[in-house]
Length: 198
Image (cartoon, rainbow, N blue to C red; front, side):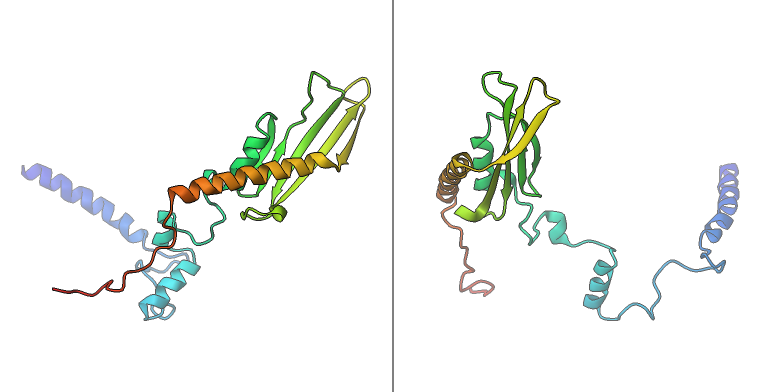
């Protein structure tokens, strides 16, 4: 029993110098952990603001996902995004970036016609469902004999307009469905909120 206490004391005395050496700063002087009182404001609100600006700590809203930006909304709740993917679901996708707001398909040709194919690019300019919310571009590839000798061009015509119209129609339907599921969007604070009544 006494022997184990002696071993614990010896172990503690061996570890103690390493603990003191770890308190040494880069300039070689001993410093206890903590901040410099001259550089830290006395007001707690200003301290919190200073720490957040310096990247120390975190905000509870950010950790819980309650950010105010609204840029990174969940993709299935965005009617334009869902409608766009539904309209071009027959085409293979090359690049899809929700946060960047762009969908690019791979080259697509019908009836095994490899000499002529199209590629569609959809860029989202806003999340609102309106005619100028989308920029739809269609690119055409025409090849002679092999895929090495091809000409690329951007086509302007009715196809891009038709795709945009179909996306806007579907997005309007999705918006109606979301509005039906959530009829009470505008929440109001009750008048007696915070009042204690017996």
